[in-house]
Image (cartoon, rainbow, N blue to C red; front, side):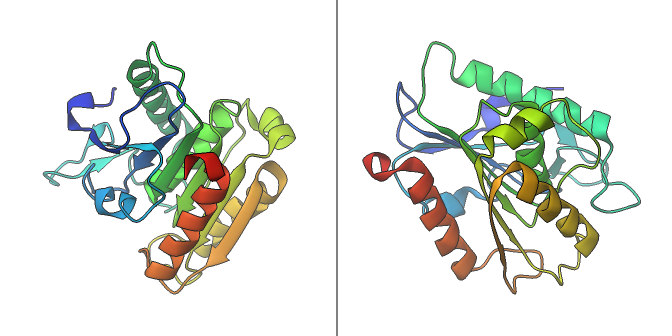
Length: 216
């Protein structure tokens, strides 16, 4: 399983030594273009890559997934989520080959948000921060959890307690883990399963703080 690099949508600065990189991951059934319009509202001083999930969805042409939907929403299979992490990690190795980019930040919506937390857990020293929008934590233990708790990278977590797609228990699990393993900025919004202007403004301010004055 691998990321189709030819489908990646790049925007912002060219990726080069010292340039911060924002990796953007869409939700289930969407594609690399879904969150691309959001990027133009974020701080401009980074290279942004909107990548396409590696799994096609049966009877859902043009829609992709990081892992299959299970009967219990918000409870994906750990092994399949691990496979997606491996795919993103391999893509990132290729995209940054020969370069020493600036801080690498992850941003994801729904399943893409679950990928943010899972990538941070597997590679706690690789990423500077994460943005989880209507996303959740994959249940179970990961080898990097202890290291992550010692680092506590900044993570923004936006969600709606009345989300019609992701159960409240999945959000509660994410907040509980995040309080112990992240420097967590958690905020509820009346967005159902979406993103509104207030949340986007808060994400922009969070990223500006993460990147620092030299990069915004």
